[in-house]
Amino acid sequence: MEKIPVSWSDQPNPIPNLRTRTFFITDHPLDEQVLKNGLDKLIRNYWRKLGARLVQSDKTGLEYHLPHVFSDDYELFKWSSVSAGYSYGETYPLAKILHPGNDIAFLPAVDTLDRLARPQDWPYERKDEPPNSPLLYIHLTNFSDGAALVMSVPHVFADQGGVANIVKAWLAVVEGKAPPEMVGFKEDVLGGERLSTFQVKQDERIGRMRIRSKKDQALVVGRILLDMAKEKETSWTVFLPLRVVNNLRDKVKKSLEEKHPLADEISNGDIITAIFTKLARLNLKSEYTVSLSSTINLRDRIPELKAEKGEGFIHNAVHYATANFTISPSTPLHEIVLQNRTAVNKALEPTDIQAGVNMLREVAKSRQLMLICEPHHKLYSSSNWSGAWQEIDFTKAAPEYYDTTSYHKELVVLGESKTRNALGRYRVVIMCRTSEGFWCDFAAPVKTMDLVNRFIGGDPSLESLLGSTDAEKKP
Image (cartoon, rainbow, N blue to C red; front, top):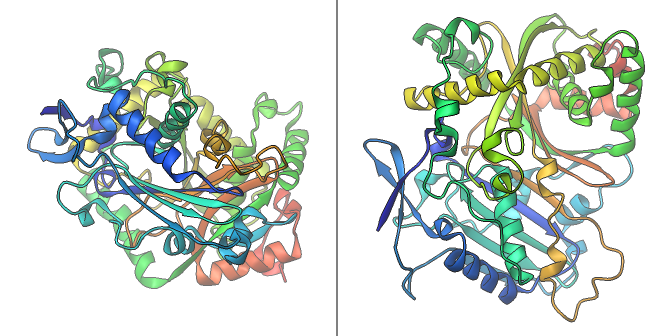
């Protein structure tokens, strides 16, 4: 039995207790046996670590236990399936998610999809796992003209970029190809000397990922607990059409032309982050200071994870950009966009990545809850994994009888990783993008969500966000 320590980069609190649930939705059925055989071959012949077990360790928090040889009766992964026997169009949540329409739409939340497509006896969190649980749980629902493939993995094992790499390697094997070599099988890639020995100055981490004093931690967490007790929240999958996002980006760029050197670097991710930063607190009438964080995928950004190395790395590879600034109902969209883009560019500097990676590991060792927020600030964050799924093509696993040459809707991928009762109002997740638009996981207090619905109903282009957006003026 091999015993492999779990990297501290994978263990910031609460990640050790999380299982990431990812839903791959296609408008063609999938060949169950082809997929099942392909995953078995991937694990036995190439990426053996996928078949390991997670075990508590006194020294390193968690470690993988991996047999030297997989016996015939060893459970490499948990697999289940069901054949619906009818069109996915008869299942409202799936039909709406695959066909959101041409305008901004409030689609069924991930939790709704979870109740529909994930077996309810699966562990929601790692603490719910039965003894000797495999890392991978897979469930396939086949319809006559579509499929929903659900994958659940411990967050300590893979972030969403890692989940995407697992699926790409899996489909490569299905196609008869060899996947990239697995990176980080035993070695702690982000714990290497270049990154882990970088000296971090604590006074320079104010407003960023850092270990807070007990007093500061109590103030930050206390505000969240008060929020939780005061207002219930609701969540939706919000579809933003590409034309709406592109239009706002063009207008923001134009407003910044010849005024700021970053104008040409503004991305759709910056625009979406700014949109939801505004909408999340549409109920507030006064100004406040926000700590706005964005997750950065380190694959292909650092020497350790360049090119094929990044394609073979499945563990957590993240860094965080944070902007701290004052915002009010009248703050125009371009100011938030610029704050976010400036913070992201700063976070992409090599020394900032080194400091951030090192600090995240120290936060993990401290067991302090991972929150990027200063006392008396409000927090909000954005994660954008929509680019991770772009090269995934499940038509390779379609049944032979099914015509895949005709037009098909693009793959839609939704997912989340949180504890059962965690609040979602402090973050937006840009889950997926296609040529149609973006699917975003968004939550807010019930009254605020009502305001958001009315706001979008009165301004489906969101152009009023470019100027004053006082919620009181909206119908």
